Image (cartoon, rainbow, N blue to C red; front, side):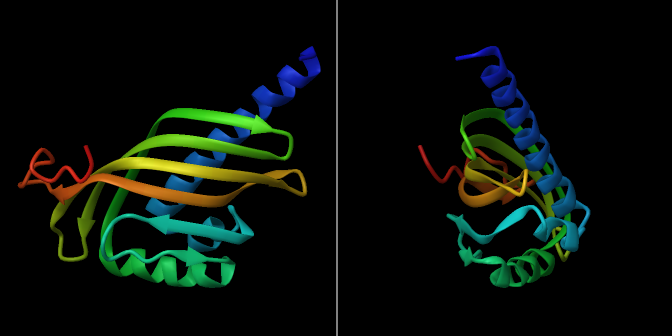
Length: 152
C-alpha cells in the first residue's frame, strides 16, 4: 500500500470517528436536524432492545427521533474501542457504547452494548449507512447492570 493510500485510510478513519462522536453529541443534545444530516438517504437502523423499532430510510428518521425524545429525558452516550475498516468509498465500524440515561420520569438508567456500522462516502463526506445496535444490558441505576445482562 502506498504512502498516499495509507494516509487516505487514516484520514477516513478519523473522519468516521468524528462522525460517530457527532452522532452521540447531536443525539444527546437533541440537535435533531443536524442528526439527520449524518445519515445516507437509504439508512437502516436496527435495535435489539424491546420498545425500539427498526427504521429504514431518511423518511423514517422522524419516527426514530420521536421514539427517542418520548423515552429519554437525559442522554450521555460514550463510544469506545473503535475497529474501523475502510474500503474505498465504504467502511465498517464496530464500537462499544455506554450510556447514562434517564426516562422522561427521571428514572436513572444505564445501557451498554455494541454498534456494528456501515458507512458510505457521499459527495466527499462520510455518512452512516447502517447501524445494528446490540444491547448487552439496559437497566435502572438502582437495579445494577449485573442482573440485567442480555447476552453472554
